[in-house]
Length: 513
Image (tube, rainbow, N blue to C red; front, side, top):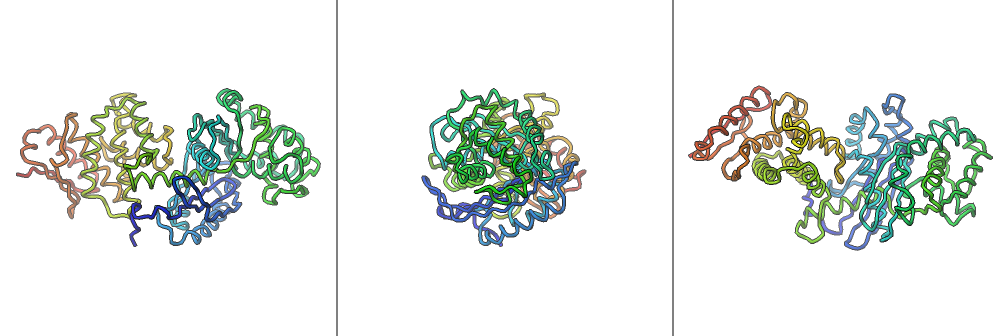
């Protein structure tokens, strides 16, 4: 059944965000308005996905099954939600897992929605978006999120993050290494703090105390320690160096996580408390944090707000303030790498005109994203010329697959990079991609557009008509234009032969009176 177009969603329709973390999976359902956010439902399960990574970086079957079972329960709650209403993101464990693609395929089947693996800096940006929206302030602030296998640090003011970083140290990974048997020892805490400090040391200058006036902590570890300190009467919930020393001493006195009986501490937090406390104490000392206060807002809300902005930009692109941050990222990449903006616009205009005639049928959201990906690929296909004109498509693709691009998931960056890689040269390098019928058409349209515009002069979209045929595709060009552009017709003939050699489709090129 085809889903309703994103533009058909009512403004009051609920949105859902899924955070597939290394320690916990979370589902947030909420309703957005221009000025308010209303939570409808919140589900959280401790999955310990990060604990399932082996020494070779493979995610074990037991951990996978725990994750899939949780996603199945989330899917039940999301019954009736349209694709445009749901966004799921995965963080550090799936950034690391070598077999992540196999798990993601299973997870998508269970959940019924795609899952995006986001970069550490994109995770940090979304964390800040959640905090800034739910706890607004114009004061310069430091926001910290300690996850299961990574720690994000963000400097920002108002709604704008100025510096975002992600460090590969978290409560699960540190606890597994230094408190693996559940015992708390002074040596274990000392070694864990040194390891955390080594990972975080490069952040000392950019996140120095002079850069911010208040410090906030998002998500599970901070919330758990804050509740513990408040329930024990040590602080009012603020996380202080003194309070952290008290927590560490309480762990040492207990000797083992099973003997730890502190008010406000949930049982599922015991196994990762040692690692979380070690990171927090290291942060407090290295960055001069006298008091870290729990923040309202976290990654899941940032994902939800980001989804709301995308839908608003899609539904009412002319509305003031409506924007998709991915468009801003593309413009910034064009500026950064010195793109020929006129040529990028020519190729983009023509590629999209060709694609709209042959685009495979899909649900409205998928179709919209496919069009946008082709448009972004056309806009960025020449950024590799900043490295070298020779094989610039390969340089462009490499940059796109690895550069930080706010708003993009890692998988979407790779998808755009594949299109850019395929915009010229042999098709053999895209054998796996072209096996997917839906991926052939944007590749074909981008290649044809770059050929039709290769002389860097304007080519009207009406000059050619692309159609599907039983064998593949037919490009029919205005006869007068074709007669006046023999070099382009030669290149198009070569293109037809390239597709014939690929065995994926037959491309026929003809002039029309």
